[in-house]
Image (cartoon, rainbow, N blue to C red; front, side, top):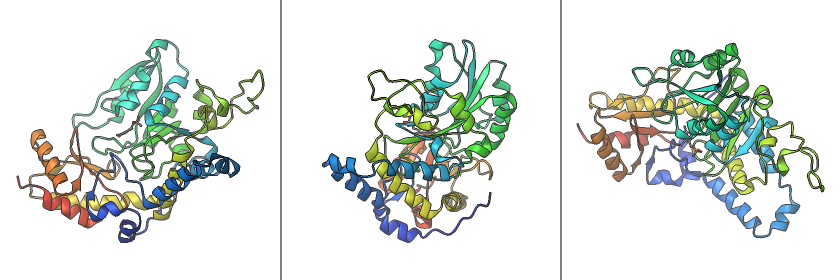
Length: 385
Ligand SMILES: Cc1ncc(COP(=O)(O)O)c(C=O)c1O
């Protein structure tokens, strides 16, 4: 795959799409990605339409969903018909956890310290006998491929983990994990909430069976809408466990409907879609397309490098891995003392620099419209140690 990235016109992005950047150095996209101006306009337009629903019904109401499925397929190396809408990461992972074929005593391997919405849906499968086996972190606190391999046994059916980790931005090697799972005939189920929209995924190439992401972070699409992207094999091996009028291909509006599952990922969608939110997501995806998804990570990494250089000699350090294959657009920085980090994060907020306190320190998460000025503002606001 040829990856092309181009310099981003941050000044235009800031002025046209993200007016919050005039006031704040917003470096908290790993918590919530702000809605671009075009998305606000799209949401306003569709909400107005819903005040006259018959007009909306008479239009091409399926178009935004088709456009989003195509756009998501384009940045995940999948096909549009393998993209389903979900309400959250927890919802999409619950579909996967409930749908995997497992006998009592079978297990799924999950690294420790994942975002709770990844692990809890599997723990909820305990009544049918599915168990969770935790893979320990390395002594440096990183997810360890060897530990995952060691946790796998003859009863393992799946490995589930995040692509980019919420605590410190550690990026897991999904190609290597895909190989590990292929060799053992296991499903690979991925939480892509901290990567989709900022990093190109290659679901088919890597051997991921399902990648799920909530839309309110790097997709800039707000709460309540996310996507689940399946591989062909994922679609075959993850059985739908809930049904509704959208799940079937035969006309269900008959006295005795028949349950004939859609061959596409729509089988997981059950009822009416969140059309309003999908309309907003469509607008946000046009912006990501305009910027070019392949440009976002290199841009953010340059900002991380500037941050790392600026921290030299201050006593603060980057707590995240900066190894090229492991780093991402998210880093945690730390003064080495949790209580002090807590105070510093508040001081940064008072200075207009928005970050988040997470287990490995102060999390800094920049994206395509952030610029060197945002990083310099953070560095200037850091109290001396
Ligand atoms: C890695 C990761 N996954 C998922 C989520 C959100 O999960 P949910 O959509 O279930 O609220 C977050 C939110 O911070 C996250 O960091």
